[in-house]
Structures are given as structure tokens and as C-alpha cells.
Image (cartoon, rainbow, N blue to C red; front, side):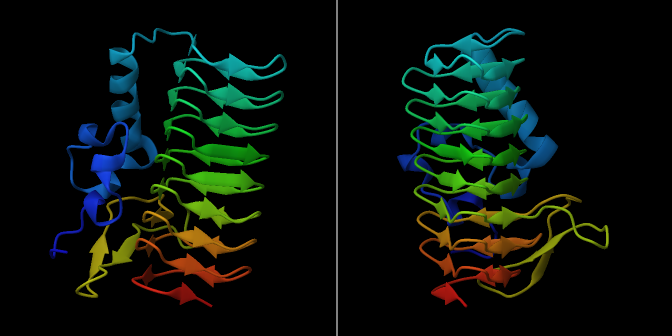
Length: 224
């Protein structure tokens, strides 16, 4: 790991379907409103116009509006609401009551679960937020898992530019963002009802136990 914080510190991009498209190394260029142009560019290449392009299965009673790509094998269940711009990858599941409100990338076989809300975020391949979660302005790496009721909070109570602690040097770095929650590295996870506050970094294969409120940088092991 170098002194520069990069997306590659958290995610094995070579193992991801669209990993080669993440050419900007600064990970904070891919959350919130900044993610919008990247998603729009991908939708352009896929031929998505002003209306959804659906190759997968959208159930009766689901609402899909705007620039949305639903890949072959993806499923959107009844009462889910998806607002573009949004990419939903092959085999992904958007379950009953999910709310996706734009500037979102859902990778292959990822899961946005029952009554889970997502905005301005990336779910890399096989990332899962299966039940009652909030994911705001965050990045979930490959094979991450959010326990039921996990909240990735994106707005500080005292409104300010959010800082993160570098996992190697311990220095505090500005994200340049007023809204940002967390980056979760590959195979990291949270237990049920965990809360990650704005400015959290979980390195690969780390974990936050159930009902724990965590803010900071977890470089190894488990936050208790």
C-alpha cells in the first residue's frame, strides 16, 4: 500500500465486471453526485436512452424510471422503486420494497434487499445489503455483506467536509465531500444493526460486530 489512498486499496478491480472503467484512482470520485457522470457514460455505451432498457425481469408492481439498465438475469421484485441513472448488472437482485434513487451502480449478482435504500453508491460484484439497510454515498467492495438493519450514514450532524484517516499513515485526509459514508473493502462485513458514520473506511476482510457504531479506519480484525 502506498501513501496515496486509491480505490485499488479496497477493491480487486481486475476481478470486477467493469473494473477497468475505474481509471480515476481517487475513490471519492465515485460516490454521491460525482458518481453520476460515470454511470451515465456506462449507460451511453449500453445504448440506454431516456427510458429504461430492460433485458432482465421486472415484476409487475415494480417502478423503474429514467435511465436504467437492467441486465440479463437481473431481477426487480414487486414494489421496488428504481430511479435512474442506474446500472443493474447480470444476476443482481433488487428485492421487494427496495428504493434506489439515482446515481447508483449495482454489479453482477449483487443484492439490494427488502426495504433497503441506496443512493450515490457502488455495489461491486456479489455485494449484498439484504435487509432493512441504508446505503448513502458509499462503496461496497466485492463479496461484502451488510447485516440486517445496517445503516451507512452519509451526513455529519455538524455539517462539514468529511475527512478520513489514512490506513497506513494515520493522517487525516479531506474527501472534499459534504456527504460520504463508507468504503468497505472486499469481503468486509457488518453485523445486524451496525452503524457506520460518515468518514469510515473498512479494509478488506474486516468486520464490525452487531449493534456497534463505528467511525474511523479499520485496518484489520473486528470492531467490537
